[in-house]
Length: 343
Image (cartoon, rainbow, N blue to C red):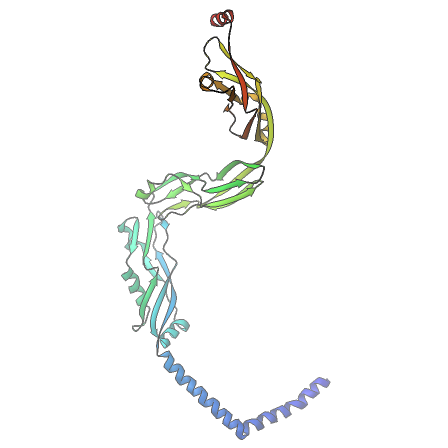
């Protein structure tokens, strides 16, 4: 209540002070000064707005009348960026009071030009100019060329292929990769459709993965081509490496009758890395270490280097210990040779 009384008491005082200031000689001089400043500003603005300026406007672009059996494999841009030049007053009118209508093209007007249609720049400029003042000059239009590609029923199925890099983390390896869907429908003009045999994903990189990873990947775009669907889901499965060691006998190959290979030792240890998933599935029967007679004949040393002739695809970093063995080509006795021939 006290605050309201104080406010009411001060209002007449403030009002009198403002009135006295406005009616004083200094106030009249200040108001006259402001008036001339305002008039000067108006003259300056009118003169400035009559100068030539450039401005850029966005005008929507549309293609209508597309038949249901036509698939657009290359769309036209959604809008045109038009740079114009005119007096400032005209440009200000465009900015504040003018709404640009979409530049519309009818599909029927171009359907006889084949699957690849090019709309002349002059025709685009003509349709834009119809919405502008006669004094307005078009400086540039972007994009300066408008074209589109369509397919009328031409389509086929193609497989989807991975176009990227997948790297597992330390002590892991990529166990499996698959895409869903593994094939897509591709629409394109006939001459272009004949050259397509696969749809690639957009390039990507996945590193240091230690668990199952899923990625949604768009398909790599090709001008004039439409993929349905336009993306695929990638699933990457990993497994952890484990080390395993087994003993494998050294076998002689292509030895003539009556001669056999003796190695010292007769068996070697093979150590390799294998995923936990396949750890128990690997046995000595999956490996083969052989030395041919021809290798031994050409060898000038008492030792022969060993190599694995057969191994599963899912093992890595194979090591043989010892990597070289002493050997002896033993001549069988005649009775053993005859027995082996009779057998």
